[in-house]
Image 1 (tube, helix red, strand yellow):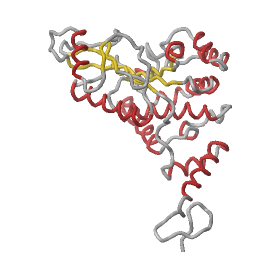
Image 2 (cartoon, rainbow, N blue to C red):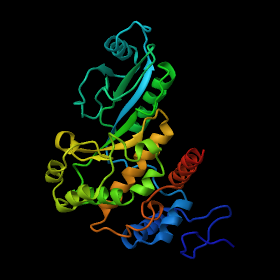
Image 3 (spheres, rainbow, N blue to C red):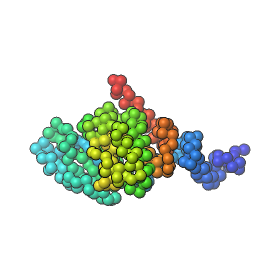
Image 4 (cartoon, rainbow, N blue to C red):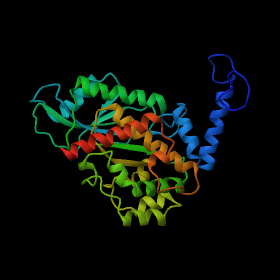
Length: 317
């Protein structure tokens, strides 16, 4: 005799774990226990059952992909000419220009220059691909297709001068939730750094979130607009000043990459982190690891461990 997996005590048919609809009842029950009561056991149960969503469907994102690509016209082609020809070649809406001002969903991608990138190959050109506002499954599908095209058709690659910047649309969130995420990120920089190469742990364009930065965030926690005004400069691991122009915060710490899996996990983990603070009015268990505090899936946790292992081997070598 077999009983329903939700604990209701009712019998189920052979080969079934739940009575019809009872799996959803259990899922909701576990979510409430985790989100309202911080029941870590409920979170573990949700993960084991595969009931943790991989991404947040509501928090929008945008990316800036810095990379080195082939010049379609050969070594004699100018950088401007190369960018314009690449824009014409692209199987998606791509515009050549210098502006980052297209912040609409469904807008065009842009290909532009970035003076911080280093390239010594005359057959290649250093560029930055800037996405429009992306959201949910469709956004990730679009991002993956673009990254695959850059890598496959343009022989795209990255070097240590390249970075990958991610914007999150935070206007719909409360200022306190955004500020708490920023403070939490600063507190866990050591843990975050283990997911990133040495060059991105306190880089020239993605500096350490120091005590002064944290002081400003705490002081202006209730007003993200005033907070952004008080942070002087954007070359931190998180650029808060982007809120003044784009209503976003910009994560600048990730290394250059054209690996979709790597970028997907980086984006979705930080989406979940933001959502964690949007659900809670107060900081809870900030001492705990990210795995024990954020509603991450088993796949995301396994990716984090894999990254730590890979980077630890690089350092040891």
